[in-house]
Amino acid sequence: MIRRLLVLLLAVPAVVAPSGAATAGTSPAAGLLPFPSDRFTVPDRSSPTGRRVHFAAGELPVTVAGVPIDPAEWNRQDGFSPGTPILVNAPGLAPGDVAPVTDIGRSLAPHSPILLIDTRTGRRTPYWAEFDAHAAANPLLIIRPAVALREATRYLVVVRSPLVHLAWSFTVASERGLTGRVLRMRDDAFARLGHRAPGFTVTRVTDFTPEQDARIARQVRGTVAVPSYLTGAGDAGSRLHYGPDGLPAATGQLLQADFVCDLPRSASAARPAHLSLYGHGLLGSPTEVDAGNVKDMAQTYDFMFCATSWIGLAAADVPYVASVWSDLSRFPSVPDRLQQSFLNFLYLARVMTAPDGFASSPAFRDADGRVLLDRAGGMHYDGNSQGGINGGALTAIAQDWTRSVLGVPAMNYSTLLQRSVDFAPFQQLLDKSYPNKNDQQVIFALLQMLWDRGEANGYAQHLTSDPLPGTPAHQVLMHVAFGDHQVSPAAAQVEARTIGARIHRPALAPGWSDEVAPYWGLRPITRYPYRGSAFVVWNSGLAPAPPPTNLAPAGPQYGTDPHEFPRAQPEAQQQKATFLLTGKVIDVCAGGPCP
Image 1 (cartoon, rainbow, N blue to C red):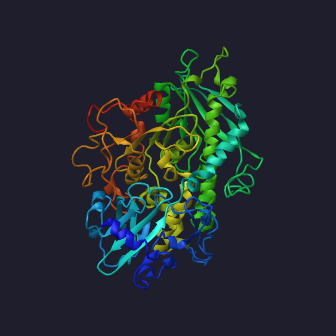
Image 2 (cartoon, one colour):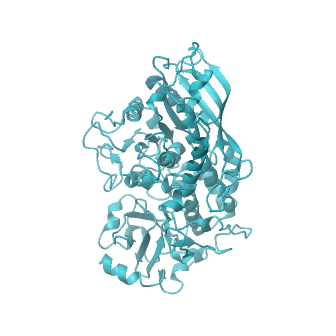
Image 3 (cartoon, rainbow, N blue to C red):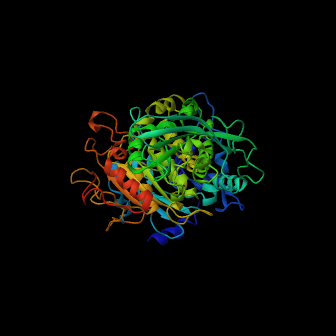
């Protein structure tokens, strides 16, 4: 049946529907529905997909002042996001008719009213569907892929309702379109570096007595000099500087990327500290290495954690990020600067391991001049929250390490935002400038097209297998908080399915999950120790399952936020350290749910 449907529908225009059915409603962005669609592309022989996105001036959503989003940056894309929300008016369908996030397997049922088909293979792709819970009337139907859509592939969407049948297609961006910018930056920057360590400056060394800090003996702060691929000074609002070939080009300027490193009290010349980057949380800073859980792991397992800022989404970016939601033409600076931040992390990793890097500085030696760093043990990565989300992208391009821990991670901000309590203040700003709820869903889909360049959603298909050019394969350990108020566990499952991570089972004790088939699509770990990428659920017991819609788990009925619970557990830290140092995932939960 699917192959016959493909033959029929691929011969017709991009959208098939009664006149006006796909654009019904009063939304200023109604002309963009259904979305995404190849209606908004043009042929381009130079792109891997053979297409190029083309939004006309004035076609994208407008502010209440009548200012449309500038489409210029979107029109660089050769397709749509591999995690795009698929948006459509679907009169005649009700929430009970479609496969919800709690029953993804239902999306593949023979008589499902929605089909999402990979036209290359003819196979159906799993998804969940939900009506926008923020819209009081005529909500859009949102179809969310349950696994990343294949790059450079055309997908067919069929929506069958009692009142109208719709069919249309769209093309997913290519590997080059998603990752090519940052790979150019990485390869160009390291070619310039050669075999030398990046330049660095130590600006402050603080030694602590055991009374001042029982776990950290010394903190070192400074900067690493990184080639800039950003316009101007590279600060908030700057954009990627493009060369004649349409890819980022170095400006000749150097950015001074900040760093904070904590040397544990356990480190000595005889037992030098293992080396790991640390990725901080949303709109945070490198000083997150001072968090109690990070200090505990550093001292217990002899790690020196070093962090730099996720510029674009760091503490210093708060005013600019707030302004974005009032004028979304300003948004491209966020993923542009995030790509520069990836390079900053890579340079920090290199200076940590190079013989003429940190090891050459007295700040990382003892009083007798002996080195306190285990350079021979290599580099590792551990990040939480935003550090887990961005860490997936960073790991996919990393050449200096092969194992990463992604704490309370996920991918695809277009799914995450309205499911997070952290987004509430930004939602208020969005409501003021773009009050139409249908417009807002189109906006989230548009933002994801660019956000893919700066978060795991654009890189996950190359994170653990099919590595990117010049990049080793990687192994990741995902620690997920059940009922998380800030990072949606549903979006973490999408990432796990995409990268082929296996799940620790039993993931939960009976009675906790509201899913028909809990953790659908994730194969179990059958034997420990396990060598591969893994997904482990940590249940604090203080929060129920989150809402099964695009709503945040806000309010007392959702208990205490467990977002920071996994990283604080001694068992989780033991599992993380063992994994980072040996590549083995061990069972720290005695064959049962964690903890």
